Amino acid sequence: MRRTKREIMAGVESTSSKIVDHNTVGYRRINGDRVIRLHLTDIMTFKANGDIVLNSGGWQTVTTKERMNKYLPFGWNLTQSKNVWCLGKGCWNDPERKEYVYQDGITILSTGGVKGAGENRKELDKRLKQIKKYVDGYMKQLLTRKLPQPGNGDCWYCLFKDKDGRTWGDLGNKSSHIIEHFKDKYYVPSLLMNAIKEIPISDAASSSVGYWLKYHDQECKWFEDIGKEQVRKSLTRYLKRRLGMAA
Image (cartoon, rainbow, N blue to C red; front, side, top):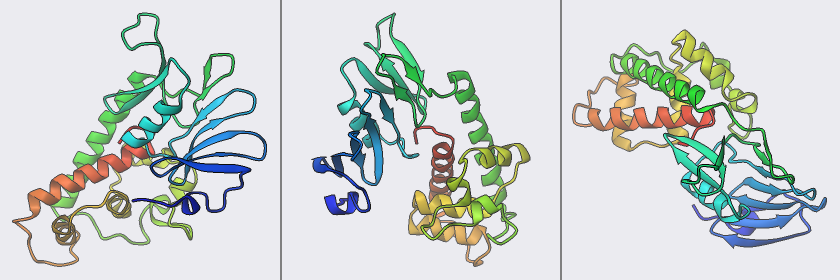
């Protein structure tokens, strides 16, 4: 999706701004901060005191990582391994290279240090296993038509949205209620709806979802494998984003 500069900067106050890349604007705030904005997210803020704040806005995509790498200071870079971003200083094969697990808000200090790094790799690998186990359970309930249709009995943080379409969960702590669903094996129907809206699936897969949720009784044997694969990917990517992982 291509956005104009006017669309990207709608509602943003600045003293100057210009297109610096595809869907990307560089602008300066009134307080002197210099900002790189991708689509509608300020992904990098170069503060007047010399600190640099990184923020994917929950969209740890290839494009976001490429833009950040383009504007990071010399020697700093973002890499990805097993769905986890790491902010590092030095060459990847340098034995003295320092790496920090990325999370939104991580800051390169003017002194050369880093604050706001994420959990260690062991904890993130644990999260990946939790996501897979939850999605496996979710798909089992869905494919056997045991999952109810979305309704008022769903988790409110997944069900209710503000006027801009953001869920209550996204307006607060994106991860806390998701982790509770993992623990409780609570397969929330509206979570699936949120996932396939954010990470769309094909019409064939949508028809399968309609059958699995009993919106219709027309079996979709020809489409079922397509539906299973696409829904699984959509759910997995949606959950990874909420837990601060590359998706």
